[in-house]
Length: 131
Image (cartoon, rainbow, N blue to C red; front, side, top):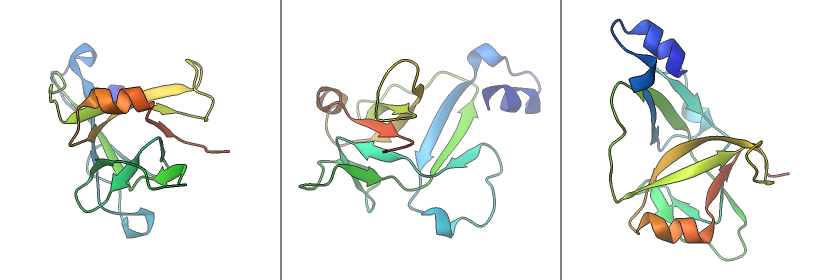
């Protein structure tokens, strides 16, 4: 996707393009058309944390709930460095629950009211498949 967006914008260099994302409040059924730029991603499950849909941020998981379905995520690319913010957790996305470098895909930035270290110590990650 970085390469496609770089080609679409004259003067952009692939080395300076980074992925960004917004977690929407929409579910799959609410999407009727593709975004103007980027992609919508659906079907990611949070492991080790819950999701506050009203405030669109990470929260502590509910008791006895192993995985929480994340709403639709809009992933797009920008032409400068990713913003450094203390309220963003760089959450790794894996293909399977078996977390290895072979199943790692990319990181998504998730809003949080706690320090990102809190979620790192909990081992919070997003999974494409929970089986």
